[in-house]
Length: 484
Image (cartoon, rainbow, N blue to C red; front, side, top):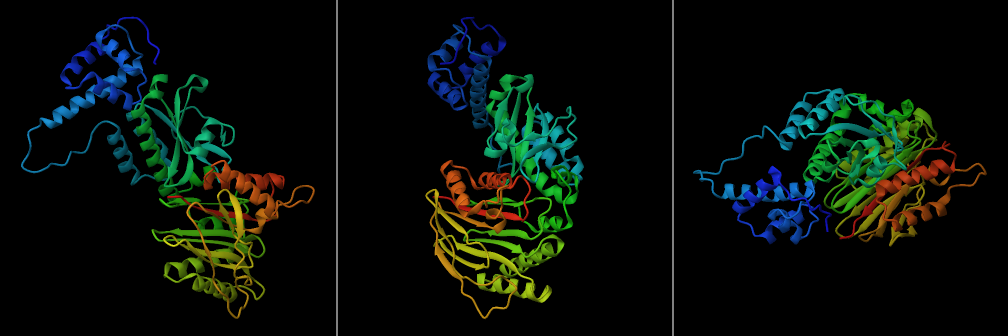
């Protein structure tokens, strides 16, 4: 039961509540139920005593009761409006949270990326909050604040071991009163792709308990994340902020070919990552989601540097082009063979895996060309390596090859990776290895970690195993078929 004082309420809000309640056409039980659904904690007797002036509930509970009564009064007013000859659409709002969102959306249409944060801050002030936008770096280790919000500068925040980092990892909002500043941390997620966190500073600690304000901050964060993803391609501000070190031309080329690191539908979640982020040269991954089919691919070109980057970009483009033309796995593999052999030197090759899942049947068709076999997880453990189609790498002349098949079940995880993951070595020369990879994935599944966070933590573990500096590119693409 909510703690209360014995002071008899005499303020205008409580008196107004009693008067409005008499006109709301609600029983006491109906009022309490609406109040409870809004997040109130006081029991029915306390609410009755509050209305009778016998004790005083905390301000937040009084406000929730006011919301419950006002919503009922709005229902009664709407029910008694005189009808028109035809239904009229409501006019565009000029005040309130929806007006703020629409204002930001309109202004962003012609704004350069540099103006996004000031525009978002202006919309936030309509909601009664001050915001700061923190984006995650490409290594997903730090949250870095974008300029332009008008608040005092702050240092980057670690993803691991901090409350904002926890919000990024879980994509769940959390309140904070650190430093005497009440604030709400809200995830910035575009679709399923985690971009950072939104810091919303609220006027008082009580505002952190306001469910309507939390919901409005969630709306704002969703729109800001979408605008970050869409406006980012028109300028360099966002990209420059997310880089911890300069990128090589090969890394620049590869990253421009990649899809978003995370994607999801009702039935699937996919997540991928490349390391070393600023110096990757020969690895790439791709995917495509539809209602009926999930396509995935991972490539690893021989060598390193710009030559490898050009080769893996060509392989990815060839497979993507064939897939978008509606051709199947076998033709996609042939397209990669053709472009590598025709464009690069005789000894050039690309290893890789092309896979396509029919969602209705669970049938997975795949081609593995000189590449580490994908891992299949079921019930939280690795149950199989998919070793079918032992063909040579792409680009080397072959007489023919078959497409392998496997049947997946809802709840299965499929993990595609390059040898840079398992061949990372510690100071003593010990490889990270397939066994350690399988153990890591099993622990992640047992802990209930989703694919995006599993991929992030796996790459961190691989880097730590090799002292923070990889000698080869390491990439991973993980798909989880959700249970129904």
